[in-house]
Amino acid sequence: MNGIPIVLRALHDGERELERQLLAAADRHRAEPEFRHVAKDVARWSHEHAERITRAAASHDLRLPSSMNHPEPGRLPTVREALGRSVGRQPAPGLLLLRDLRDLHLTATENSLSWEMLAQVAQAAKDTRLLDLAADCHPQTLRQLRWTNTMIKTLSPQLLTSL
View 1 (tube, rainbow, N blue to C red):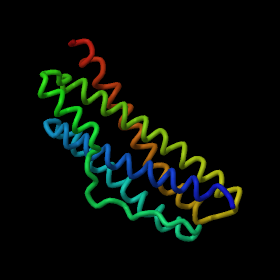
View 2: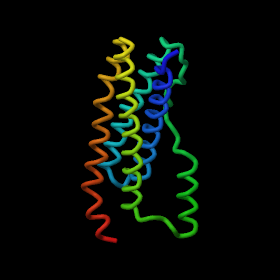
View 3: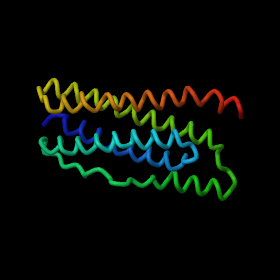
View 4: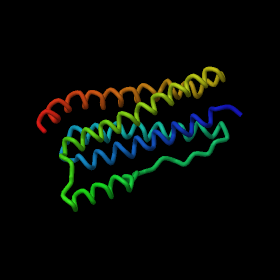
């Protein structure tokens, strides 16, 4: 046995999680049309990545669930937001957006590292199909990272100085 199935499972789960987080954040910040539009677009990349990983995993005797059609936001953030509103402790929308961007950036970073590991193990195993998969998908993950980083750099000065 080798570590390819371990990396594929971690990457699949990470891409599904990033898709879920992006769609949930787009829904939470629907008053920010530019953010909402881009978040939905880059969520599609994660959806496509997870689908491709599912197909690639089959050749390594790993059965991964097909990607979600419409992932639901996690229960904890939904419950936390509802509770915050009911007791009057809802963070300012700008701070909520910064928190979401930070969380998205960290999840995309984890995925980027997993793509790097997949490329390395594919190269060592001389598995050109997995190497091609990493070469195709990792650049989009890096673009997701650059987008979240740019948004944080752009928004944090004005939002944090206005508190």
